[in-house]
Amino acid sequence: MNALDHALASGFHTALGAPGRAADIDAADDLYGWLVGSWDMDVLHYRTDVRGRHLTGEIHVGWALEGRAVQDVWIMPRREDRAARREPGLDMYGTTLRVWDASIGAWRVTYINPANGQRDELIGRRAGRDIVQIGTHANGTPIRWNFTEITDDSFHWTGVALAADGVTWTLEGEFAARRRRG
Image (cartoon, rainbow, N blue to C red):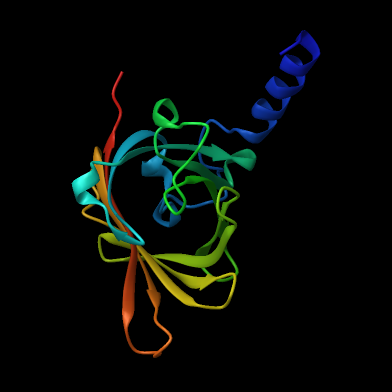
């Protein structure tokens, strides 16, 4: 990267990132600030049960857009394990943008994974101690993504989609995440 490219990239990252939540978002409405930081994850299910493969990934999260959004990057397999040739169906290098919308009292969530063409739109709200995000895949399939078992250092994430029968919810993804230290 030459000096001009570095300066442009640095300017972009500086303009995108924010040190914390915007003052006009109440602390009670801050569903996602606890995610800020870097995480390692065990991939338990991704379209199929992959527990036996010991597949891992990483998540990096930060405040963005003057603190009015929380943005992340979900990567599977981890960057250090990514080969030039990836296994179809097991490639994730996507980003989620979560933006507070005071008019609906919830977070608008958009996930995009260019590695496989996935695009999802959801609404995120607190449900007790959990975070429930309800929306659709780009093709209109209803989905529900949940953050559960949330602690300062870990969380469990599941994603389900409504099957064609309109009754059965099918597990599409399940991850166990641990905060990176140091």
